[in-house]
Length: 246
Image (cartoon, rainbow, N blue to C red; front, side, top):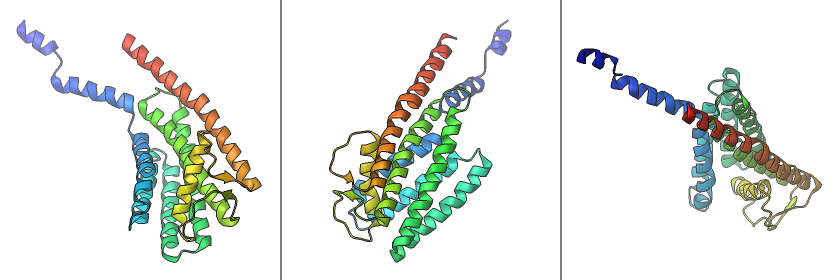
């Protein structure tokens, strides 16, 4: 009889395997979590290193990490994986050319390629988040990633507008004309202030195109938060409660 009880008792590797499966079920594959961490790293790191001697190099390196994390998030979609891989290579190359040659049209090309790439990331991640299935923590991280990507993408769009039509924004601090990364950082601040509808008023859109894009960004931010994020978090709580009851 004792031997029978020992055989019926689950072995510790089986128990550990079940725990690992439960963890993976909650966090998914961590693809969106990796992108979220890299986006937050870029967001928090850049203001502190911008004025340093090699600050631009550090910021560009953090940007490359974001692109690599975005490519990793596309790893389960073969076509998009290849497209984003090629797009990332083009964006990094144009960024290096901007740093070396400091030519305005190259800066427009770099911001344009990066903007399209962030758009691809956002659409693909949003499609994955809205796909049927369990609402995992990784899916919620993906939804937050899309929100941050919207802010970064709009900042690049504002940067292109300012390069094409200087003076489209008033209140921008004075920086060197060739400091395109610094200008994007300033407009990133304006972008997230608009996305979250904080509206401090220190930087203002002046041209009709800039005002239109700012209005669209504010509307997008509010609709996104109230509709998508709230729904995902609510479904996640429901699924967690159901698992606890079972």
